Image (cartoon, rainbow, N blue to C red):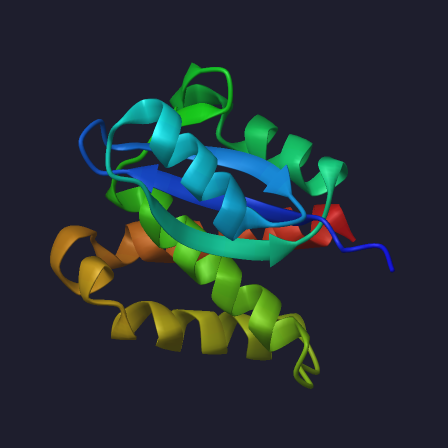
Length: 139
């Protein structure tokens, strides 16, 4: 049985960087990275997808790139990652149209403490619109 590739986001709190990569077993991948780096690493999110999604995410965050697959992770990027995960969860539910999707994502964004305290509402709207566009482009 072939395992599905997952796109993972691994966060390094010390350096405030996130690694966007793919693996069949992200839990094992983080252990390997942890052993080699000597720094604390946290698995932020895993998404179903393979090389194509990984490349699109690399392209999306290209202006955050530090080196290789490591990207500078600020509050906006963290929120984007968390909301994108919710977007994927909602897609698996019965979303009838883009308006409903936008409404649900905005609702979820208000529930994230990071959003409430760090980012203005217009930034959240921008992130939500960007997420919808990104998802549409990936279809």
